[in-house]
Length: 367
Figure 1 (spheres, rainbow, N blue to C red):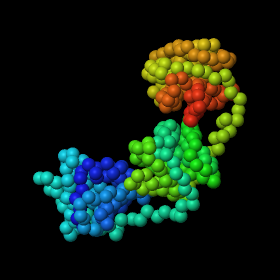
Figure 2: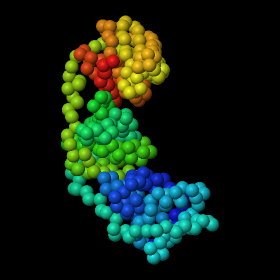
Figure 3: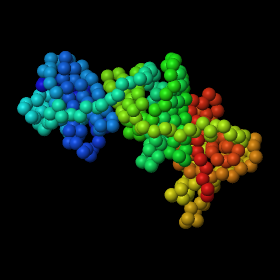
Figure 4: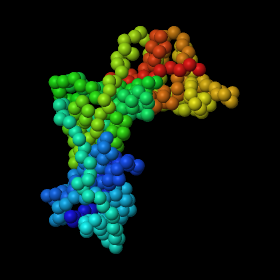
């Protein structure tokens, strides 16, 4: 096995693959990246048994076919620290890989490719094509609401709901919820719901850096496979049912409140400095055209700030986790934010005033 490749060609795909590989592995070979040379192509594979990423690169110089696994992070660090535009010569000699570039020489230990575990995938029943920029936007507008290590394991991920030509992405940690909805661009002819695990969502958000590219998404009840340019991303799915959140829309609401996003964001950030470090609570006192934000903490520090708003409803006092509100407001793309509170004060909707593709819902808290 022998090939030559430029440092600039291999570096980015190798970084993507290494990000999938866990630092601590139960199997030593899973700390390695699988390298396969065949018909003038180099195929690199990284996996943690839950997620797999495969990247295919075309080799411009003649190469000797073969396959081997090498320590992923060491291989990446070598490539990363070589000069830009450097050529890397890769050669397998017995059970060692010799890397050379300019005056640099490296020798890496290996493990046989045949011991690399197969990523078992089921037959894919569903498939659709989607613009990568649209999918990436949906991920970015929902990712921050996912739970982290919640016992309700279905919350440690993101719901992907395909309903013919509509795509809905939903994430929630039980205290807040984000919904992104857009058109797929074609009729799929089916309705399906799957839950992507947290790590898969994070890796996909990192991977999708070309908004004009097209994704080919295939999935079954327990696996998803996404073809993106020269990369194939695969992941197991969370085997559970996402809670029915539609009830939150079927209730009475108070008058909506219109407020400048930037002013609200800055005021929340300032007031939150003196909030309780554990609960981060901020009280919203809404009356007429004024919103008063206030907070206090166990050290008896207090903060308050007043903002001018557009509101026609009844006076109201309600409290929220300031970080949850900040996350929601920050993720709006418009200059204005539209805030609507349920009539029974059980939830608060934050969205853009015109044609919103996404909504954020934050549950109130007791102060």
